[in-house]
Image (cartoon, rainbow, N blue to C red; front, top):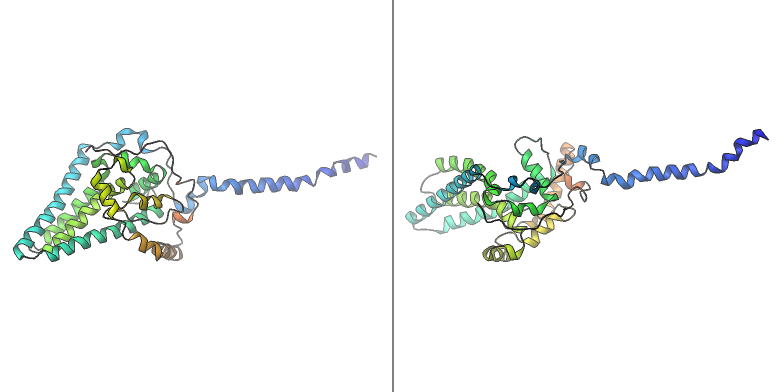
Length: 294
């Protein structure tokens, strides 16, 4: 009789595989919600609080204002030289065409730059690390960009414009109206692109009427068009000046092709291939509001 006692527990054995299967599938259901599993593959950043947690990070400093003033001075200097040269030559066609090309190509450039920092690198990336980290936080808390003061939002780009335009203006021929027009328009759009971006996140009732009108006619990237970039899978509508290139780039799958080239050449996966629904899911906590402070 005692030799039969161990067999009295046999009915419980079939339950063990079911228990094992339950524990085996549990990580599969929760692995997508486990952010550390994505970090080694996509080099995503760890951001726990929005910029509004530290209100001072949204305000402009005198250093910010000085850089923005310097950036605008560089842009206006280029445009003034273009106007002067055009008056001397008696022809405005070439500088106007050059300025238009500068505006159009800047929109394309912002798309490629935006795609690159959205998908590659991390906080430790040389030169671009802080911008990469900021853009990852922007996907989590996009409404904070509308609460940044003007110079706070533009000072980094204004500094880059200042250092880029000065040598060009120094070596450019004084009577070349087209070159000055192209440089001025391109530099101006680069510096203001972050403000165009902020306006694309603003509510219509809070935006200046002239901005709403420019968005509606396609001169500036519209709110509806940019909103598509903040919806899964977060891999479209990267251009943030006018957005005129977005449809073409997305239709031809230009960025997807570039991602495949990077992956096969270097083995690096873009962040847009990972499951970003939780990582880039927009969190509430702020109300879009435009700041008109400097």
